[in-house]
Length: 379
Image (cartoon, rainbow, N blue to C red; front, side, top):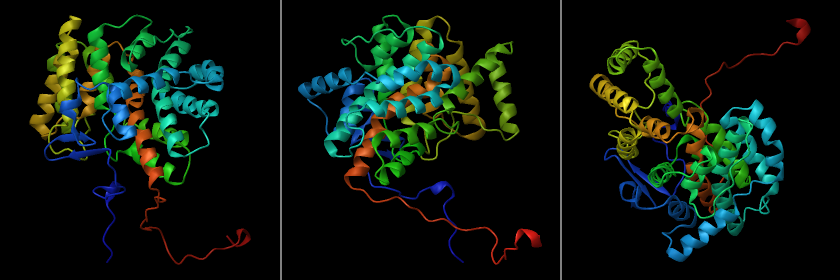
């Protein structure tokens, strides 16, 4: 009897990559050999995007040059701008981003080229455009004009400026920048795999990124952070002591065999290293906000799930409260994830195109056999 296929391709090596690596048992994540704990809070998102896309840690001149590329690349194009008001009225955030990125390709001068230099330029533009598209969508759905970008600000600070219309606090910008670093890449996750499968057909980078965005929109991938926050909000709004309510709600759901979003991971057998960093950020922001209820609820939920199921929080769990305390609307949590992961997606497309082979896995047929077709009149 043939060996049964791996469910969900678990433990199947689908590609070779030099971009990121995970030690699931040790709870470690590396970008091109650098430990994420060393990078978070010390390397800027622009440095990490350069590292992933261009293969080495940049020097000062390279960082300045890359930032200049990002500033120049923030323009999203005429077609995306023209269709934005209609898209904002009729599409949810991730649907809108899927549409807007596709439309932006029409104005990219390198849209039809997969050459290495063209891919590097497109990667920078897509990385620059994603946070602007999110802020533009948010402004459009409220009937407001987008706040102009400030060329003196980095990606994280400029996003907060354009999203809120107000100059961000320096520490808030630093924390969001660290979040972008933490989410920039994560080996062969579902959206990255989708991007590489698309790129392996020699489809262009924008097409591959659209495939990734569609995949990220699923609640079992990027959508989990939004569900975490909505779950916390629902428990708090139900009334009573929020910590007691968390304990009883989570225990009840676990007893019924229900999944608690934000816990467990297919790869990590211990705590997700990104959760370690995000927990600290959530605690800091909660204390500064004057209302640490959601942070305390999160810690209680973490304690109950660990005690009853032995599961650790993943990146989505504390990202939810961090984004909340930063003033980001809940339905934009996954789009913010996409703004960060754009650095990794585009780097994977570059890597795939550089040494390409069509990704074409096999499947096991489990349907009926030996049937005979009867014409319509004979049925």
